[in-house]
Length: 369
Image 1: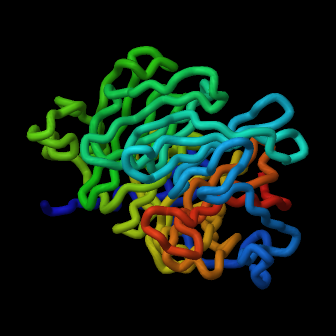
Image 2: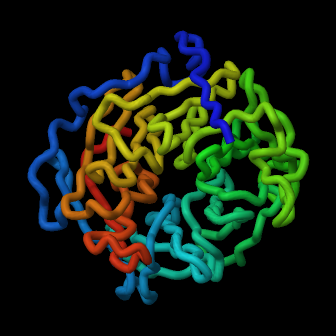
């Protein structure tokens, strides 16, 4: 199928109402944290003043469980004086997600499973009501709403569509959830629940030409029925939809095949790319952000970096992993106070496709907040 990917509204108005003040693409520049130093004991190059530690390894005991294989998308949740980091497992059949509960001093209190027996759980997203949306990246995949605190059972949310899900980002201002699709002609979707906070029912739309949303006629097609991305002829298509993050009226999402970071401005109703290659960022994948407007984009391949994109459109590496060339960086998420960044090397130094060498890290330092 012909892939139609559009760059729309490249004037300053494209980012009205957002943290971004102009739509000119980001470019390589000096990091606000300074240059990366030599690799530390964990093989991680960081700016001065930052430190790393390993918090979990696939197949090894942590907090009372064995940490899952192929750690992928993740998010942090406040928990009294401590916090919780949840992480998906991108493997078939057993997939699911686990949680690490941290005390106020950063030590691990315990770990536990929050989702079991699902398939290829890739990325997802946190909700304003403190649940984790775990997305299956398989044909006719589902979104599962899980409880990071481990008190409630996970629920499949089929109204959010049956397709090759990647990531989700909640927009509380417009009471919708944006969803990416990891296909070479994937789409950007918008789910509007009938009641905000209840994802059991609602309407699924797809972003179309002219930057308008049109309803997907059949969000849960059968195996031999037309897939969601092919049901609306005017749908926009993106090559390999990946991470998704919402902030200040803008949904930022990445497309690895396009090598772009896109921005849909929900206030102005415009679409543009804020990064289109040419900088230090390659293998564009998971994305997260801070209250101050910085974006952090992880690489799948490339030279295994996490790059910052600042509001004044500077792109620069803030972390690099040596010896992980056959892996990918997944699940970047900040602790609630913004002082700690969590992420994983999905396959570690082994590069095993089953993700048996996965490593989950914490970086602490003077992050801009």
